[in-house]
Image 1 (cartoon, rainbow, N blue to C red):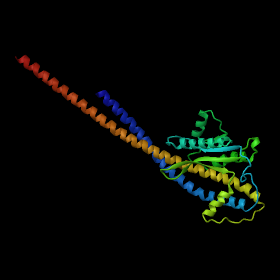
Image 2: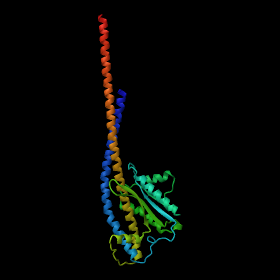
Image 3: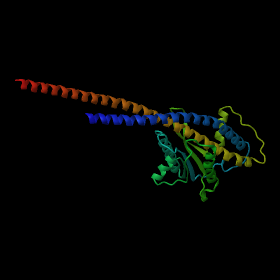
Image 4: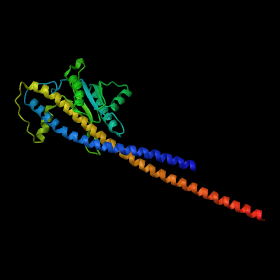
Amino acid sequence: MGAQLRVYKRRIKSVTATKKITKAMEMIAASRVVKAQRKVAASTPYATELTRAVTAVGTGSNTKHPLTTEPETSTRAAVLLLTSDRGLAGAFNSNAIKAAEQLTARLEAAGKEVDVYVVGRRGVAHYNFRERKIAKQWTGFTDQPEYADAKAVAGPLIEAIETETAEGGVDELHIVYTEFVSMMTQTAVDGRLLPLSLEEVAEESTAKDEILPLFDFEPSAEDVLDALLPRYVESRIYNALLQSAASKHAATRRAMKSATDNAGDLINNLSRLANAARQAEITQEISEIVGGTAALSDATAGSDK
């Protein structure tokens, strides 16, 4: 029984150490998700107003811009997938990857070639393990993304959609990321970034009783769109990066809380088993003492005769 008790004590010590780590990670994730939420809230008004400005310019003029004009035939598409650099976040990365795979399948079913752009080591590892081509990848900033990171991601994507398809360009750009709904709910979503559908944005504004402002364009509406559209793409990607970061921290917090609770339950179970083993050991020792005393008494009684 002594050996069994030592095994239980070693396991309790090991699980207790793990519980301390998961509890610390839970607290760190909780603090980071609050900061990420604030960044999401701060970036949303800028992205909204920029979208309204682009829509006002596009609908208020007859300018045809490659980033707002639907191609006659779309044969090639780009998909930007946002994942995280680290794991320990439950199904966060697998849900985003699954959504990207489903979107890719739909685009390919429509007869389009798909170029995949990936942010985050988890997404890169998924495609590399399956020996699937990645057009471009970015890592190292998913936990705390900055606007400069979004700008670095947007650059090659804008260049690809402005390039002729025959020369390696794409006709449309889609993005897959995890939307932060609440601390308990994060949903993998996909949407088309480019070409920007001005009619849909205008209809949304009308449904919200918003009146699009009227602008005078100087030097021209085309030049204004040339300046605004890259900023629009950058702001949308930045907001998506922040949403994904907040979702990842929330998922990590939830996963670490579950791990901490499970560790506590395991410690309680092991403690009960250790107590039972110690009681059995004490009972056995008492039995051995009583048996030895009885045998000694019998031996002494026999010698007196």
